[in-house]
Amino acid sequence: MNNIVELKNVVKIYHRGDEELHPIDGIDLAVGEGDFVSIVGPSGSGKTTLLYLIGCVDTPTSGAVIIDAVKTSELKENDLARVRSGKIGFVFQQFFLLPTLTALENVELPALFSEHKAKEERARELLNVVGLSGREHHLPAHLSGGEMQRVAIARALINDPKLLLADEPTGNLDTANAEAIFGLFEKLSYRGLTIIAVTHNMELAGRAQIIRHLKDGRFVD
Amino acid sequence: MTIVSLAIKNLKRHRIRTLLTILGVAIAAATLFSILSFDVGYRKALHEEVANTGINLFVSTEGCPLEAASLIIHGGEIPKFLSMERLKEVKSVEGVKQAGGFLIFSLPTPDGSKVDLFYGISDDVPKLKPNWKIRGSWFKDENSIILGSEVARVEKRDVGDKIYIESLNKEFNVVGILERTYGQDDGFYYLPLATAQKYFRKEGKLTAIGVQLFDVTQLESVKNKLETLPDVYVVPAKDMSKQILELIGGTKALMYSVLLIALFVSGLGLLNTILMATFERQKEFGYIRCVGAQPFDVMKLVILETLAICLLGIVLGIAGGLGLSVSIEHWIRQFLPYIPAGRLLRPDAFVVLITVGATLTLGIIAGLYPSYRASKISPMEAIRNE
Ligand SMILES: Nc1ncnc2c1ncn2[C@@H]1O[C@H](COP(=O)(O)OP(=O)(O)O)[C@@H](O)[C@H]1O
Ligand SMILES: [Mg+2]
Image (cartoon, rainbow over the protein chains, first blue to last red):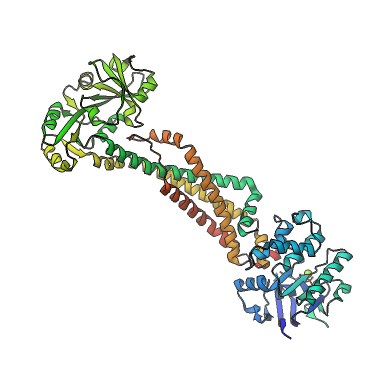
């Protein structure tokens, strides 16, 4: 089976003053097409940083990141943006919704910068899928944390990505809604979408085919 | 949603700021539009006037006779005068159909509030002025006066009334009113030539002679013949527009410097607004980039916002320029050394095109730097500031 994500000895170093941080400290990872992977680990273990590297939002200090046969760790900003737009859906931990756009427009936004352009119908569908019908025209400020999170999930799916990256996608949801989102992920994964989800919730993590444990920037399983 | 509606949504965030910036652009566009309309209109009005006049050649002592007139109107040195002899001689030159003599004078009113302009004209002059329509009659005697329409309006006189001219200490009978020409001629008192010569103590003198030819193709040869007369300077009417355009060159230079300032100030206003609008949205540009926008998409977004402001400013500016054109024309007229008949502000497709083109160019220039900066914001920069 083809690997859609491959990390080879990836290291990310940050400098904070004189201090050198290694949030990612030598990671190897291979995720096959259609896999559903959970990443668990304590706070500060590097989960978000890892997702940024896979999601082409950030580039590694050393090592190789390969997404769908493209070595993204060597790409320039323009090409990284193209990979983000064409292949990846990202649910950010803090959502990153635009405050002036309605829920519907936020979901449509990534399509504007892809070859899909306008996709209002699909955006409505996705809002319906995440259980937000009737909230289309609300601004983020008028949505609860859980609702914003679900808008972010719908937005991540608008460009029909090959790979869905979700950073604590149920962090703000009650049990029932968290269940529903993981149920949705299972369904999407069953249809062939590759998913990497970071979570605190071991019970939900258990719904994935593969669970990886991260600690101090390394896998410990 | 499109990238254009996204840009417009962004502008609506700070309605007042956006409106003020649009207003700034509108003022620049209106200035540009009005000045170009004037440039085009003045040239056309002048050419029309020259084309419509029955005068083919002007004979004066030196320089352009209209320049002389303008000097008088604006209080410059009164130039030398032609002798009446010349009028007879000019009339007898072969090829000359008719000729009329003018004596132009200006006198301040005794209270000094304004300057009255007088035109002494010989009986041949109406034949040389086909656009003149006189209500009432031609001069009946040496006490007759004909008023330009503007003079008649200001002095509240009509045909049959008497008018006392304080500076000449004399009462005249208003025998006719020259109907509105929308030009220079509206502002004069017209006196019989002999009367004017008497009261201005220029017996036997003329400021200029207007000459009409039998055949315009003979212009060069008649001009050469006229130039053999002593003390004369001959100008073809068609060359006068060039000389008058030179005469208003200074006024135009002033207008264009005002325009440059207007463009510069509104460009700075635009730059400031767009720069502020991008600084306060750094994070959002980062988010947009996170979900797949190219640096160029961000640049496009900011440029679109700038152009949206410009377009609205252009529409408002052109509408304002059109709406205020009567007042603007009235205002500009005060500064002109010579006013041809007809409207002076004549916007056309060319004027609109240049206004739109120049204002959009201004917008693109003002938007270039902010949009470039915005496009350089990396996703990680936006995220790190969370
Ligand atoms: N941009 C950054 N600059 C400096 N340090 C960072 C940056 N991003 C993350 N870190 C540090 O890297 C470590 C891992 O962070 P993160 O990946 O957010 O962990 P997690 O998501 O597992 O909580 C933390 O110690 C964090 O402070
Ligand atoms: Mg995290």
